[in-house]
Image (cartoon, rainbow, N blue to C red):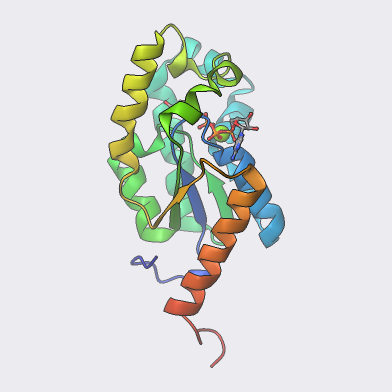
Length: 190
Ligand SMILES: Nc1ncnc2c1ncn2[C@@H]1O[C@H](COP(=O)(O)OP(=O)(O)OP(=O)(O)O)[C@@H](O)[C@H]1O
Ligand SMILES: O=C(O)C1=C[C@@H](O)[C@@H](O)[C@H](O)C1
Ligand SMILES: [Mg+2]
């Protein structure tokens, strides 16, 4: 669970990564409530800044612009904040600089879900995720599989297949407590 950050492990931001629809936003808000921390959802931050949904931002400004704004938001949080729960967009780790900044400053959890479970969620996601639109199921599966590489570097991988969102949040908290105790058992007490 360790990284290069000067920030004590218990105060580092927690970043949730994974493919669209694995539950980063839902689980992140449970986690924030349970740990009494602020929750930041990068997609929602960008939507608020532009005052339009992601699908409209993609149509009006293009994915490239969206990625630039996404990077700005994440880099700022990585360098200026602590104690936050951050859900990043499913494509954020496509940008190497974003990936490295998160891994160096924060505790990064990869929320994993298998394809068969994921595809049952497609109907719920399609209207609001531009990168799922105008694709066949085979193309979406190809995207799903090709994206797994970008999530492979993380501090902890959580298999979410058999768990509801709240159970995943509880599991993350158990993992964190173990990591905090193991790596910094006395920090802050001396
Ligand atoms: N563990 C879970 N079990 C069952 N359903 C879940 C679970 N986690 C999330 N969901 C449901 O899946 C849908 C997508 O979840 P959510 O929006 O949190 O995904 P996301 O990872 O934030 O996606 P994106 O990267 O596109 O923002 C929601 O309808 C949510 O209620
Ligand atoms: O995986 C992706 O490419 C995306 C995921 C969403 O979270 C949004 O960031 C946007 O819809 C793009
Ligand atoms: Mg989300």
